[in-house]
Amino acid sequence: MSNEIRQVWWSQPLGNVLWLIITLVCFTLRKRVRGDAEKLRTTQSIVALWHNSIFVPCYYYRYVIHGEIRMSMLTSASKDGTMLSTVANNYGMRTVRGSAQRRGAVGFIDMLRELREGMSMCITPDGPKGPRYKCHPGVIKLASMSGIPITPLRIHFGACLRMRTWDRFYIPLPFSRVELEICPQITVPSGVAGEELSSYCLLLEQTLMGS
Image 1 (spheres, rainbow, N blue to C red):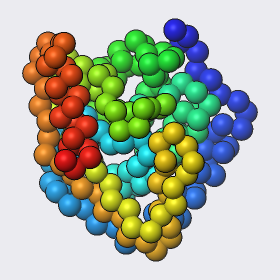
Image 2 (image 1 turned 120 degrees about the vertical axis):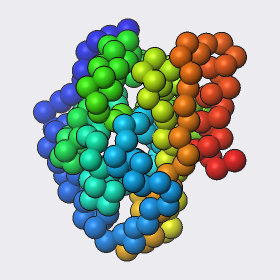
Image 3 (image 1 turned 90 degrees about the vertical axis):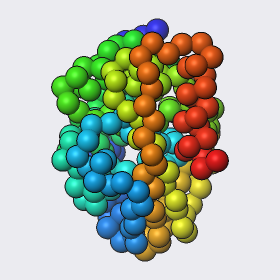
Image 4 (image 1 turned 90 degrees about the horizontal axis):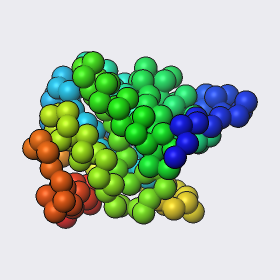
């Protein structure tokens, strides 16, 4: 497993362009939040959402929820991850770089350190390469080892485009409706493994799917 972080000269400039596009589109959206926004704003948590819904959460956390707890986001160590890191950084968030394919162990240790420093952590449990809507065990292990609860987020898009990517990425159309639903927290006990770990993965999947 490589510990290399991949980037090319255009990764950050393109990330800045992407941030500007996201900001302009999100400014026009008819935004709504459902659930306990106060807890998300003021209480440390591990925020989990599907990879295809990451267009709006950074904007929401900065300008709609006005989070008091600083947020860090896990992004891959790929060139695409560098662009996403640039977007998150422009919204005042920190980032941790890593995935199962590259910097996995290092990224996990970095996430634990972020949580121990009082940060909240944002993770896409099916990212960065899927399968779509399948929870990888890393987020459950992180919650178990840190003692920090998971806050699942479901994002409901109105009029939107769907990209022809592995995750069928959502891009909301300007002036459309987007609702961020904050689901009840999931607390994972210390030392989960085996079937219990799998059951928590299934619980998170079902919560994010609304089933």
